[in-house]
Length: 431
Ligand code: UDX
Image (tube, rainbow, N blue to C red):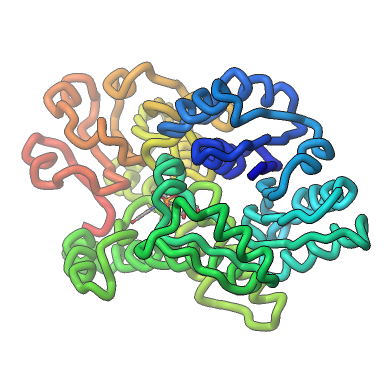
């Protein structure tokens, strides 16, 4: 089967590379020629474990190639994936201009039956809009539009593609369903089923899944305030809750709030969709509100111990929105750094992978060469991302380097008792 993947962003590249690794012939299309030449060399423009190996292997074995010619690429393929971005519009809605733009181009290129797969995260009803957009360009063409949302996590995307919990396919015709089942055959097992459903269900499942995970995080973050007020520890509380099989332990870590390209955007987009359909959701708005407040709660915690930040040197460990990624989008660390700058603090940062990305949006801080260099002369340390290398630091070395002895642990990765016993003032989240 020949596949065409349009959009070589995160989702498109992982999808294209991983399908080629299953043996399909894949062409990845993008309008950015410079990016295409980087990819053709086998270089991945972001940090994603395992992806570059897969890319290189399949480029070498000629199953994977890159092109800027949409028409030719669509015409050669039996299945076409739309993987372009759906940025956040002014009211939080998903902006569909790229998805529908690509749909129009696909319509102009159709030369026989094809399955058009929408992988971009899109609000319910988009499958139908894509179908109409293609049909307008190609009124007599034979095609199906399928919704096949992705559930890839950054930093684990290759693994998630190869071992999905489930594959959701929303299709209206038997022909499209059969084609998608064939495409995913080698990834489907009894324990990781291919769920065939309607496009509307598939579209809602995607947003609902992300909103549910975000809800769990905002719930524990909300509870963390009560824990602080009454001397309880949110880590213990979450553990006790999670031991109930019905609840489970995952996605119950209180911290500096969720970030990334999905949760913040998807929660707001679902809220917006619900408003549009006359079913406004206070619940979704609260998830978002709690998260924004949480991201802003670290600096006030620091100020309780160090009220005057003007001229103080504050170190930040971790800039990415989570470990094992270079992505800083909606990262709590950015919020923290900007708050500190507003208070005229001298901000020094370190991240094992995300410093290049951070420089683009945070030019005014000092970038340290390693975690300990960031602490040189620092009055306090704020941990914003739970990279493994921050979990067991050399506290003696930290004490020697720092001017002050304050640690704000925004991800609850350190042991408060141990840190305090070494002479630091420790503040965590909900403990
Ligand atoms: C998420 C979804 O998991 C994925 O299925 C979807 O396709 C895209 O969005 P991703 O954004 O890569 O993936 O990150 P994820 O690992 O889910 O973490 C999201 C954020 O939640 C991170 O900022 C993380 O630090 C935070 N988080 C996660 C918590 O604060 N507490 C938790 O318990 C779990």
